[in-house]
Image (spheres, rainbow, N blue to C red):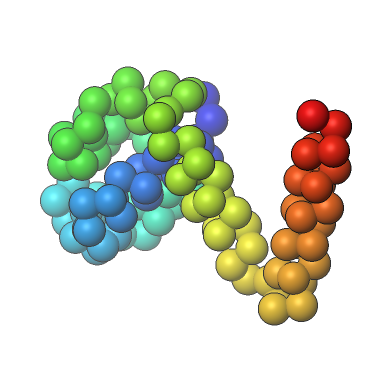
Length: 110
C-alpha cells in the first residue's frame, strides 16, 4: 500500500470539504499530530481509523485505497506542493525550470 498516496488523498478530500486538520482529527477521534502523519504518509493507520476518516470525509474506502482516482492531477499538485514547501525561492525556480525542460522535450517527441 502506498501510504503517501493515501495520505494525499485524505488531505485532498479534507481540503475539498473545507476542514482543518484540527477539526477532522476531532471528528475522527485521533490526535491532530497523528492525522498530520497519516496525511504525509509517515504512519500507517488502522482499519477503524480508515473507516472513520472515510465516513467523516463522506467518501468510500475504495476511493481512498484505489490507485487511480479521477482527480489524479490534484494528487500530483498536492504532492508537488508538499515536496517543494521547504525549498528556498531560488530552489523552487530550479525545480520549475527542470519541469519546463522535461515537458518541452515530451512535447517535441509526440
